[in-house]
Length: 120
Image (cartoon, rainbow, N blue to C red; front, top):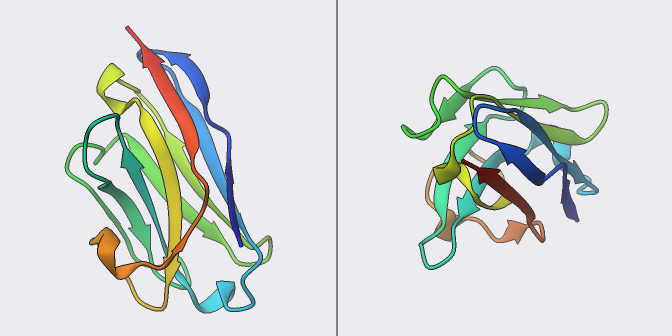
């Protein structure tokens, strides 16, 4: 029900835009979030957005560089990533739930993930 795309290989300082297309009937009322998981590490909260896009929040490591947005007309949530660093390398996942939440254990709807690799 959630399909991520837009990942790839980029040099440090570059930009990528990830998309997450949802087929959930509840998308327009869903809160959405992006998480990432680097090899050998726990899943980390990246960014979240409430149902109408009016409230956004970010993990400390991406604040000021990443922007989350939600288009209810297109059933899609985006993650604009700028000034990328090698430490941003990870598999990025989108997730959905009824209300905003930073903890991954509280989500039970996940996409398959998209790989982002940032070279130095």
